[in-house]
Amino acid sequence: MTPSRASLSLILLAALALAACGGAPRRESFDLGGPGEAGRALARPLRGTLAVAEPMAVQPIDSDRIVVRTGPNEVANLAEAQWVDRLPRLVQARLIAGFDIGRRAGSVVRAGMIADHVLSTEIRRFEIDVTTSEAVVEIAARMLDSRGAPVGQGRVFSSRAPAPHSTGAAATQALDEALTATVGQIVRWTAAQV
Image 1 (cartoon, one colour):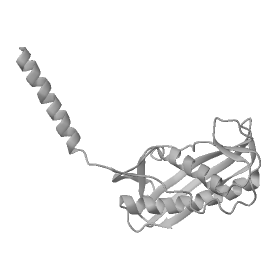
Image 2 (image 1 turned 30 degrees about the horizontal axis):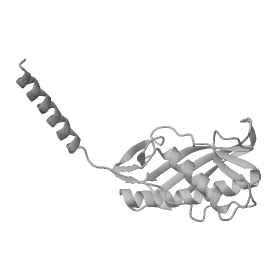
Image 3 (image 1 turned 180 degrees about the horizontal axis):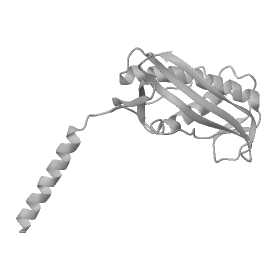
């Protein structure tokens, strides 16, 4: 192969790669809002330090995709929309913010730092259910001591919000509303545990 043919081949490959990238649909990125009133009504102030672990989740929740439930056992991803980061990281930030806004004592940190208690959570549902036109958020929570041993009984928290439209902005707003209510429940429950 002559140098001019090699150069031409490289240029052709680069052009094809650019064309393939340009053909992919552009996705809008969405973030979850602030905690709102989630933590304003703590049952009592936190005592000591609380670490909030990153929630556990399975695919497709453990990703940056927005999940849409289309049937009892069928899920899809919202086309042309995504979260700005993996959903468990966004939910962890919202939980921490929910505690911070209502805290009068104690401190809230990310897991991995020294703490008296750890809030361990699992995101079980975080989706737009098109069969009911609702945003559904379900999070299981458990308190652990500083050694990782369970403290008391865990609990499952859930909230729903109307979601008549499944476009990016409308869907994420509905999910954010359901999450705000769920975070409020978790914050109040946790404050009563520690």
